[in-house]
Amino acid sequence: AFNVIDGTGRKREEKKLLLWTPEEVKKAIDDLPAPYNCYVILMLNCGFRHQDISEMQHIDLRLNQKRIVIQRNKLKQQDKAPVIAYPLWDKTVELIRENISDHPKYVYTNERGGQVRGAIKTWWKRNKDNYGLGHKRLDFLRKTGSTFVARHNIDMDEFYLGETLKTIAKINYSFIDGEPLRDLDDAIMMMGSRFGLCEPPHKTITLTPDMLAKLESAGIEV
Image 1 (spheres, rainbow, N blue to C red):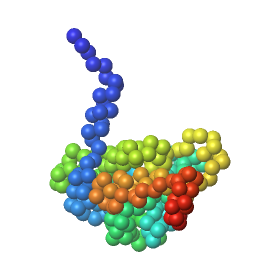
Image 2: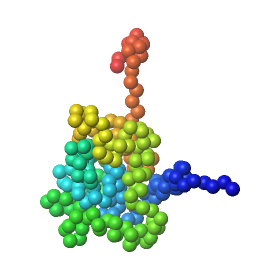
Image 3: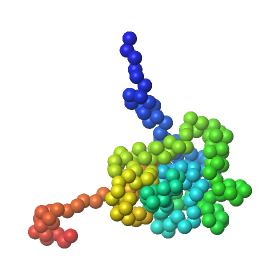
Image 4: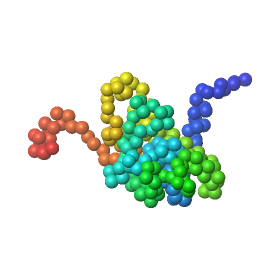
C-alpha cells in the first residue's frame, strides 16, 4: 500500500483552492451592502486584516493621491513594521469616500460609534450565506492579494502584507517608509486589472547607451 504523508504539499494546494476568484470578488463588491463591500476591496487592495480596517485613521488617507499610507501594528513592533504607501484603485477610493465616518480619529466605526474589529467577523458569519459566499473566508482576500502580487514580483509580497522587516539594513538604515514603491504599485495595479478594477500599469523600457546612440543616429529625440 502507498501512504501519502500529510504536509508534503497537498495541504497547500487545498488552501490554494480557497483563494478568491475575480468573479467572487466582483459579486461581493456588487452585492454586499455598505460598508462591507468597502471592507472587501480594502482587504484585497491593501492586504488588510479586520484589525487594520478597525484601526485605520483619517491621517492615513491620501485620497486625492489615491493612496493609503499606513503602518500595521498588529505585533506592536513599531520600530520594525514598515510604513507602506498603498496605491488605491478608483473603485477603492469611491467606496472609501462613500463609507467614511465622521469620527474624529477612525475612518470606520460600528453602529455604536466604536471600532469595527469584531463587527466585521460577526456580520460575515451571519450573512455570507445570504449572498452566495458561504464557502468564502475573508482572511483569504489578503492571501489572494499576496499571491497575485508575488506572481507579478516575488520581492513585493512582504511589503504588500506590511509584515515586520527582517534585515538589519532595512530596519536600521534604509528609511524609505511611506514612499511609493514603483514595483509594489505595478504589482497592485496589475492585480487590480486581473480583477477588473483598474487598467494595467503602463509598461516601461530602460534604454541602454547603445540603444540611445542608435536612436540619436536615426534622428530620433529621446
